Image (cartoon, rainbow, N blue to C red; front, side, top):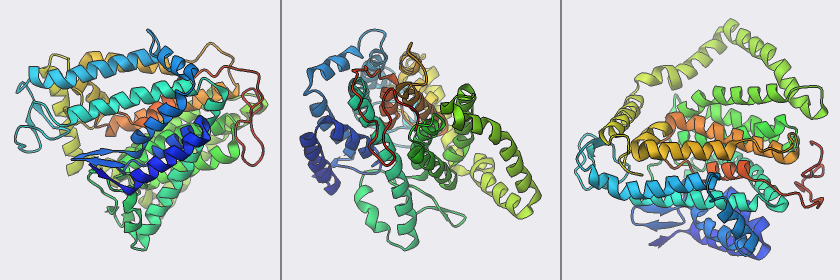
Length: 473
């Protein structure tokens, strides 16, 4: 085992946050999930990310209070979202061990990890792979993360800390994107090597037609764009709801620009769909109420502004050529590129794995795909797919509580963030694990903060703070 400098930093930060309390620990944890290319520890060919290490400190801080432990267990009760996620984890763990052995040689897989069989043309015969264990650990960590987030979000203070952490995540995501572009421009990419030390294949220096592919703190452009979609959905919805508009509005706009300029096909494909999600949200919220002004403005102004922008692009040949060439390069012509053909073949093999195992799947972490739904079907089959759908339905279901309160608006923002992450995973979802950021947002969407009558500030930033029952900012 090799301990990395960022791992030492994570441990020291965790100890410091424990001394400050749960509020600081949960904020730091949310921000730590941004280090998607970093390894706190290296265990052979496996990497332990800083955020997964930090989960230990979150657990210690959260379970100091027995009430948090009770709430975490409660979300695992029958019919609760945690129950269905736990079913997915249990089935996934069992399938990870038994399926590759029961169905050995029954199908051809694109292995996610190292296989016992020799690799030929990027595929091997079905059998156990090293990622069966690591993906099981990751999915179990997702369950622990979700349960703790729901428990922490059941109190006003914890709920507020999660939102502050997500806004801080948006800030640091922009900062790392700018650092990525700046260090590349001056030839100082080594400055960010301390957060690019995991055992992954990195594409931090790739360019498309002379444009730097933005990777930020992630291994590749598609990973950066995919995670930024979630933050865009969260901050964009917060702005529509007029919640901390002075922060969420700029972060949503900058995040969208970074997604489009990242040169990621995933981002360019998903961005218009995410905009439609936000526009539909605005349609549902528009009206004459004061807290509907942003949504109403978006509903009224978007169609004419979109038409005007389209006219400008169509009438100005230089602009049209630039936009068309960019879209053609990343989307239209991408379908015939070698990478698209390869990723398409991964999905074909994945669907064949589903058929060859009679709908049970080849086992969690066994096969690599290029689409999250295909990853579910190929790895955990019909049972695992149903468990995930039940989890999503129960976690994202609107509560029977008053709407347009701060808590309900934040839950709506978290749901939209999850939906945007899922849209990105449709074209770039290699595994069943959607990442800790998804389950943080899902946990926030499923949280039900109890009103204790305390007038606690929502966010102590310039301009004052909202309260859980307060007016929009």
